[in-house]
Length: 394
Image (cartoon, rainbow, N blue to C red; front, side, top):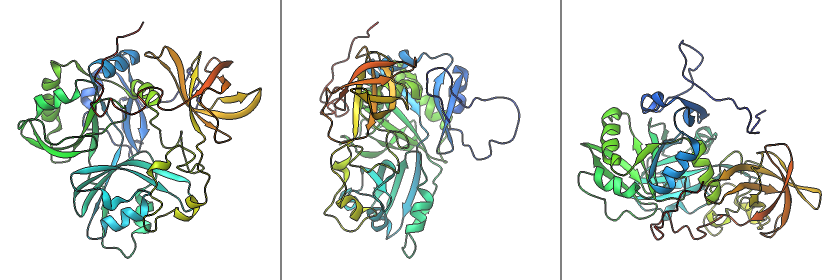
């Protein structure tokens, strides 16, 4: 049982000794983070920094909104290689994977046969028969292996780690870091291989913040220390800083970006989670197709606005009656409000519906349902179509 009440939580820290972390992996930039006092969650059996003793969470949020911030993530890229790689992935995912061209990325949702969600992530098509799937936390490797029986495809762990550079200055940093200049084209969800300090590195125009940004993929052959020194030097003039998942968590709630395992899980369909646009009903057979064909289309997931910070797992009431639960909560420094994501018991509830929400102080507070994302409804910021930088609010 986790608390999520704003009072206690259990995170991983680096201490002297040996043993019983055998199944955990450190990010290649672990020693870069260590002087700042990191505290880690375990994500895909990888350590991902939630917060730092020497980096304030709200400061990290504003670096992201005003300059640039870097998170070394726990995303787990799996490699699919071979003549049947596309056929397998098209079976596993609800979107038509055949439309993802080499040099592009796609958003991949995988479901169980009953339509319940298994995992989501970013699919990179590096070559016609070579893909990486940077998955969220979840049990996908064995699932993919089980459904690949009889197919000519190799599924493996390429030992790749993902880092995000996000914020309004992020593309300026990329341009400064690339030996050959900014890759062209490099639009939203593009993929490229670039020369960063003499090393060829895969990058994607993606992220978990709904800010302008890109991600880079550190492979086993890379000199990670040299790569970080190069990127850090390029980012210094643009205010680039490390930050933790707690800072990103605020922004992802504002943006309506969901977390696998909490905002949705095996009990929710993509339609429940408002992800119906990522289902291609007319494509060939895929796992969960029949169940989704007969599923309710109206979403049950909603945004929340509240006078206090919603308690993750806290009850939501309408007219005094239980109506749902909080799946994510924070205080937004930009909106100057408590914000959250809610999974309601019923579908089709309108934005603006008055609710009471159990908050981290243990009390019920007045709030309302809200449309996600909470602002930038057309996702213009990550596409570079909206470049206004917000002023920091006290």
